[in-house]
Image 1 (cartoon, rainbow, N blue to C red):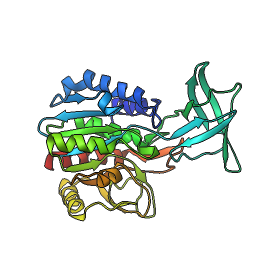
Image 2: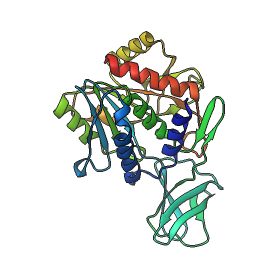
Image 3: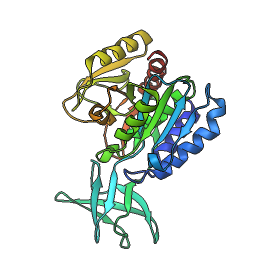
Length: 307
């Protein structure tokens, strides 16, 4: 990865955007595209506004396929007194540093876990309803990057790198994925009714397991808690083999992504999850191999050209 790529990923990981509170990242993405699109092969049309809430769509040429990448993260909401409620499914260990802001100013506090209940440790009370996220601590070694929120800022990063050379396609940045979803149905409706696009790739991050390891390539998922149509998945596997890009196959019984909502939509849209694997999921220490990031971007470039 180039130093500029590392800086972009580091910046993305540090932007405050828990589920339901994604607007800061949406604004960053709009500014980023407007600033950099003159260097891309095709300048996309930017589609956003009240009818899309905090989602953003980039339309390139004549779309035949789409990339979905969710921009939200897990986190915590302040309840009453010093109580916390999870946003999504974050790991919660005593001592984790959390940041946010309320009407009284910026916040940096510590998480406390006591018998399954979550609290914050701070020098003053925090306004109820305030969102908190893990404090960013981005680390890089020769082989790995490690940070909170590589899930899914790495999926967003990959989509932005694909945008540099994409000629025909849609890149769709969705919201709320970590906490039940909700934006993908209307995004599918718009995509299908405007462009009849019936092919979707989910640019997200998966897990290191007994069958998936660091440094062996991007993961093509055959299933998680949802089961995509095998005809389409076989098409993706054939293109992955053709590309020469290192990849791994995943078969899981749990977990999910925007693919679930695509499958539940009333439109005949095929989907497949394609993403790098990480360790220490949903913690401040998520860890991904640089070679797997490179493979993720390369395979997406090939798939979007061929689909």
